[in-house]
Length: 166
Image 1 (spheres, helix red, strand yellow):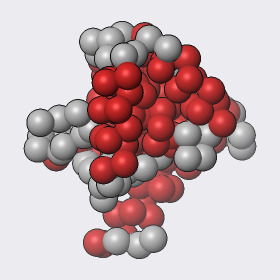
Image 2 (tube, one colour):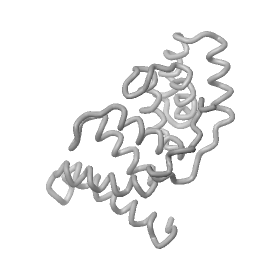
Image 3 (spheres, one colour):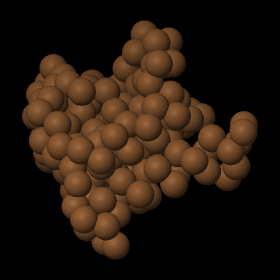
């Protein structure tokens, strides 16, 4: 778990402390501190921090609601294999929130999230009803070929190939 100079341990501690502030467990609730801590963890490439920061933007917790910013953070966490981030990213693609509606991408991310989330498997069936058989086949091809990435810091998003990128 420890990586270069203990950065991973520090990022995990920051993310966990953010959860404590968010939930008011042992410390008073403080949304500004939550966002600060999640941003620190996310910026170091920790998927939990990236996901939680995405949720903050998605749900307007401590920041102004910004679906595009939420998608950015979900993409980073989803690329590392975090199922809940994959699910939220899929929902963003299905609903056109923060990104153009794209049922193929939604299906891809739901397939990946569905490896561990029953809800993702159910939602994938609903998304498939809006797709052609050719689109479903393309989405399944992308999902089969997908490989998780190592921790990705936000400043390194340029050049990261996500499903559907050419």
